[in-house]
Length: 309
Image 1 (spheres, rainbow, N blue to C red):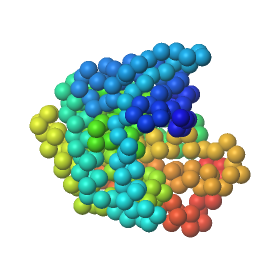
Image 2: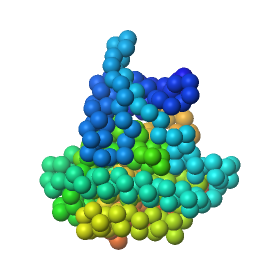
Image 3: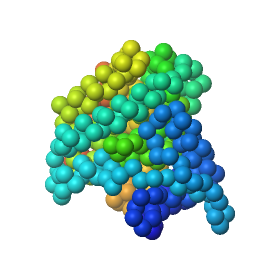
């Protein structure tokens, strides 16, 4: 049974009749993903086992077990229904438990940061080539200085094999799926921003995390990090969110600038990126609670420029 097209690896996701196993199809990128998933499973990462790999009709595939019927994103969304409201505390606690397991596994196999590895992380996790190609006006000396500042602050933070796209849609109580955009990252980059990045969706998910819930989530990760590392990577949340702001702007410029809905979303993400850079410069932090919703942004007349220049 077809589930969806993949956002990477040019393939699809299929599920069997009783929804107990998923089959992912694609090309070379998918093969790399399967190999990576097998490797981090051996390292104790909470990932689905790769049950089978092979090629079929010139496409690579791998099969993995379902981690359950409901992601943490679906659990939060189902709880609020058609309304907009705070996510249930039970989902926050489940997210903290999954995040703590991932963080502990990453910490157990962390390695010292190098400048080359940090540069690669920003380029790959932040999609800087695409972001600055689509938004050349944002590629300024000021933006580059802020990125340089972030990298300097992360010099002594260990790095680990990371998901790059970790969030509630990929998280289940049993583990984490969809390791398409993996690579080395400063430890904490996957897990600490998970509730903060909900704000980049502009209220479209229906649920949000309150300040108290975000603090509760961070405290649980800090406890796990202190046990594993003796330090709290969450102190670098500002640096992590600066890169996330780039990630959420990537691939947003529509090919058809007459598509007003897509242009609006593109300009919205541009505005969030600009806000994030300005906040980071002033405070070293990024307050996602200060982000406007997409609807509030749409009500502002200055968003209407179509060229992004």
